[in-house]
Length: 201
Image (cartoon, rainbow, N blue to C red; front, side, top):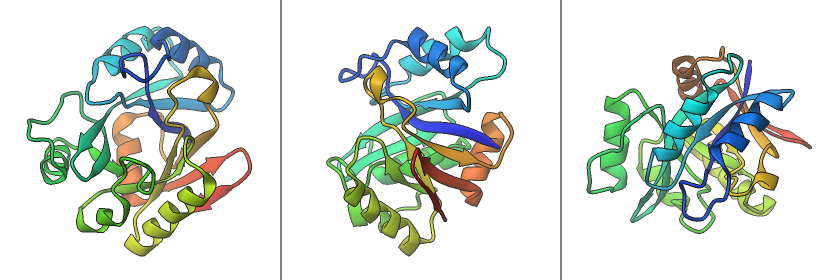
């Protein structure tokens, strides 16, 4: 079993201040969370930098990812190391991810820049039901959406500052390998967790 934060931003997102080296050092030092998906806004530069800095550490995993802005809402794409071709609409991004073995997650669906109930119209692999930057009553709407869609529910801090790290995470029934984690997300072998509770799907 792996505990992973599936939604983190680095300074390569314009609205984030997290230094890649700080992220790697904190991940290595954390007692239980050992994997993160670096999901900067519309670019993969942060993932490349974090991955490079994490190479000396054998017991942590950096999952490639990106948070892409679309006209209908933000999508997290995990498992791809390149950006999809434009135009960046939801259909094209989902198609790109599936052709390249990636996973698509509807990010914070009922917060600003989320898909909301429109997520039902798209073939996403999972719903972010526990977002560290989202009020609990709004996360609850995302939980309900995941249940309605019979979709896996995952968690990510959506951290933009160091003090926002490690508040929520996803328990994944997998070993510390990217492909296995992605397969487990698709299969629903996940549990969204915070310090106070966990959410089963």
